[in-house]
Amino acid sequence: MSTSNPTHHLRRAKVHWRARARVHRCGSTMTTYASIADNLEACRQAYANSTNAQKAFTVPLFDEAAQHAERLDATPATRPAPALWGVPIAVKDIFDMHGHRTFNGRQSTRTVEPAESDAAVVSAIRRAGAVIVGRTHQTEMAFSATGYNPHYPQPHSPFGKGLMPGGSSSGSAVAVAEGAATVALGTDTGGSIRVPAAWCGVVGFKPTSGLISLEGVVPLAPSLDTCGFFARNVADCARMLSVCAPHLDTAEGTMKPTPRDVWDSESKSWAIPSPQNLRIACLEGTLTNDMDAPTEASYRAALDAMRGAGMSVEPLELPFFDEIMEAMRVIFYVEGAHSNLAIARDAEELAQVDETVRLRIVDGSAIPATEYVTALRTRARLQTAMSELTANVDAIVLPSVPVAPPDVAKCESDPNAMATAARMSSRNTRLSNVLNVPAISLPCHKVGAEFPAGLTVMGRTRGDGALLARATAIERVLLAL
Image (cartoon, rainbow, N blue to C red; front, top):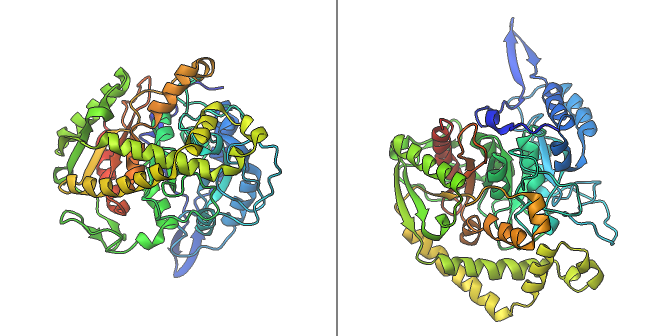
């Protein structure tokens, strides 16, 4: 198995969508294709050459994908080409796919029947021409952010054999990082996209909850759940969002633009702002406490680079951070336990669940309803308070995860190490879920760094398109690190 770090060159690579191009010659129209089959073969080879990539998939579908690619290559061109035409995409095992069983990271004694239809988001990417290359590894019931699952072969961060990949959408992040997929679908309830993105050195985008249909997705905490994407750059996340939430493609979008937001009517997207026009708040206090040395060095270097590019970057502390985290804990645990109520009531089933996940189900089942209602009210109040506190900034940044990925073997042998990994992995990411704002994790480590690090950029609720434009401006600065 290769132990090299493929994300070094991925951070500088531009993903070339294998969309079809038309060539006009001698008054007639000839259709030529960038070879979809060749693009897929590159992903297949990446899968074949890396044991880690193989562990990222619970069900590889490269043979079926090759047949699909051949059909697409033989299809007469249309204009414009579908947005994801021939793009190899991996799908987390939490999404229904017609004819496939959705295990949600479990090994259950119960019979799991094949899905009768695709999840809504899977249908959307298929209609846009995507080629699905497989179903990916995740933590059990998506109820942990470490990426650890004792029931399946364990993938690791491409930054080192044996390092946790982050979760719960672990396999999707690893598949993109290893080159076995161009983009991947994941879900995010408390950091399940941004944690593995940070620990695997790729881009991970969590949209505003409610923008993308969750039909056909196994629920965890419905008021927090959202679908999202892994990619190698922000532009590819924007392309995925345009397919999965097409109603965002309007001049007004779903948010009230600021005077600095410029809508490009030709590309139907928010224009990428000049760095000098960006006002950034960098969160300090608890969210930057207990950072390890490699992560802090990467984070501070990223902030310095943003300032050097002309961005206004000023510190901001959240006076209500503890309230936010307590509300999140209660909502996450109660809804997570309720979604898995059948398991909680079945002693045999519950005994098979990984200890970290089992304790969360048990703890959530014991929280009184009155405490849950109070948490929902607190959440609503703090969403308003956060909106007012950040009214004069364009984006908020913070470390995606305050620590580098821990060692899998150490966590397996030491319950305290596993508990620390579970707590620290999602400490910072939970903020955007409880506030219901879009957030994207960008790689911010230097090329050649021993450990990965992610910079989270947060926007305003339902301001996803504008956030992606601002994140693109920040991404351009980080690529120079």
